[in-house]
Length: 435
Image: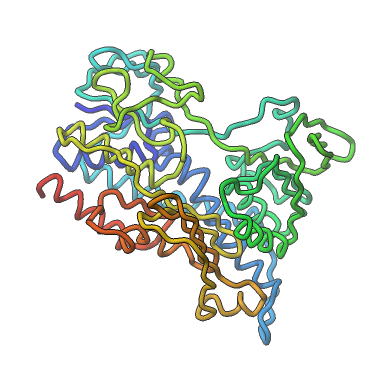
């Protein structure tokens, strides 16, 4: 029997591959059925993505199109209830897929992994042929005074909040920008405070386009330096930064992620200085017979990457010598427009203005054009895109601009509604498994 710890994207993908290959699979999650889908479905990218779609609708109702007048009222509590109902339906479908693959799903707290290998779950030792750690990640909370105060929250709290009047969003990465956009578009007064760089690694021209989207919904963006402390005052929560203060009803921390590697640490499995489980190119850990995949192995903390790593781990456990490799990992910051980033295995540098038609027309009419920018990195090129639905082509860019089939290595933008990309990967998997 193969035992998988964690029912998020990496663990669930691993379980499906093993189950469909005829293996007996036990999938353990500390939340049981409610944990299926992991933080992506239940707390993070799916929740934030759904709210972004709503925020875009509300933003357009306020920006206006000539001849169209809309009046939108936001009932955030009802929105959250509806979102939870939809998440439950998605979770049910994922559970059905596991059941159809013959995977046994159970609720349990895994204490450690022992030689054998075996897992100790709720005090019982379960022998296994292979063990897979897919325990995910959680918000990285700064180690400063006041982060435990009521009103200091992370993305995990989005569906339990009332829409606040004033919010300080702390962070300068993609998640912080998306959270600021959502809350501002829905009606909150938002100040986004970043340490030193906004969207680190993105060209200045692209960052300026992201700022335009934030400004359109009223986000005030401030370079405040590091967060020093948070304290409760009669006026609200006061955040002290290196270069100033903010006062707000809610402080939303968008300061990154950290691996849930406690099981590995308790088991004596090697982790690095950041707490990520160390794996080789076949997703094997320092313990024989034990693999790890997804966020627990560290950045880039992307759901499609977690699924890819879960696939690689499962294939190697099945006896296929498949290396993880270093495929391009497209990602998108979703504001009023998509701010996309990927890498292609070809050399090109320059920029092009995107066509102003179809879904981009009314953005162009508001002075918000589209952009494709290439930044050469040796024999590769970093591509940056700005525009409506610009993310749609990113997971095909590498295949379109380079030679040779690499279907298994295609990592999609998340979330995507494009079924073709999943068919491409399924066909590659069938070839490997001989189906």
